[in-house]
Length: 244
Figure 1: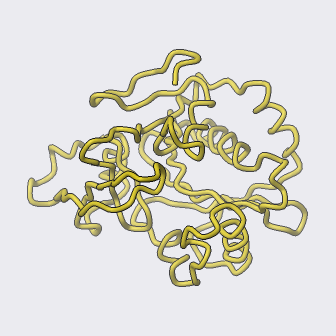
Figure 2: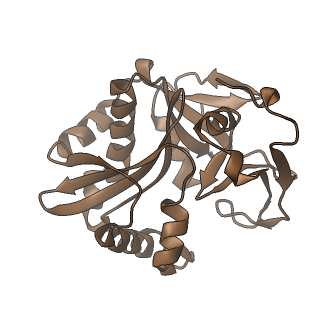
């Protein structure tokens, strides 16, 4: 993997944002370290950035750099060693009737309407439930790296879409949205399981899940995929079973 140290020092710059309200822990302020310029962040460079704990939202590539908080911990699943637990195996069985198709990044009205239903049901009042088509495109359909949309269908109906980045050493799970009326199927869990299986088929070593946050119910679930590795003190370390 090309190291950022091998790039010209002027090619990639990092800057800190001003403080803003944390999206995950109420009452806290957050800051991000942003990598620029976007035009130089291709798949090779982005793979290195993800290894160092960065994520992306549209073309915005960042990692948390909060003044007095280290709650956001990058997490990844080592594909070769992953073994689903009983609940995850049941989830896979419930969703065995879904059809998965990988598609290029392109606007699809059915995807957008599913996204709106998901945001309204799961994140109502958070702002994203009002995203118009242009905001949707900017968030999910703009990428300078190797990205695909994983479309899951039940018969004729699209019930889940996952945005996935292909890195040099794995897949990065960017964002997933699904039909809220089918919540009992455990579609979010099945989306992760499907990406782990896709990485295995592609011969890739990891699925990067983003940030694990122990105090956030929305983010703490990631430790349920075992074994799990977390980026701590500049190194990826496997967590002992049962540790959080």
